[in-house]
Length: 134
Image (cartoon, rainbow, N blue to C red; front, side):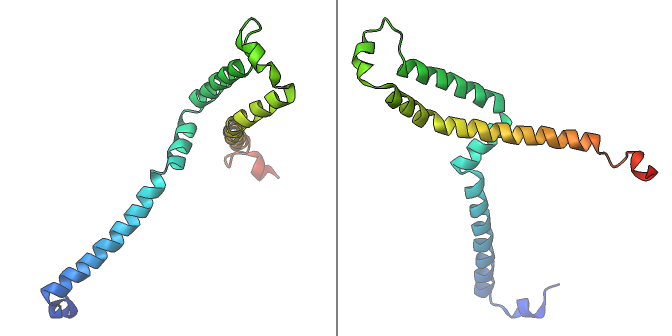
């Protein structure tokens, strides 16, 4: 049964009220979708879900960077790159690998904290009979 206030609204007013509710709902869902489908959220979920693949890809990328920075001794390009000092090479290497190291550190820390938390939950269980013996 319709309330007395709804009966007094004209069809145009009802349509405008429904439109306002729909806009508010759409704004809420648009904000939620923007958060869920942002590149940062997608990559974070991918790293959490496929941690081993990301670590392997980072290792392969690191090896490729090493190969590009320090070519083999017999290479003709080695003479052209001889002008770079060791400090410049290591600075370039650190600059290129710092994002990968940050990602690996974050992944390892979260994985380690999860493992430690599950270990503690396993050792300190609420069903332990020793808790009532004291």
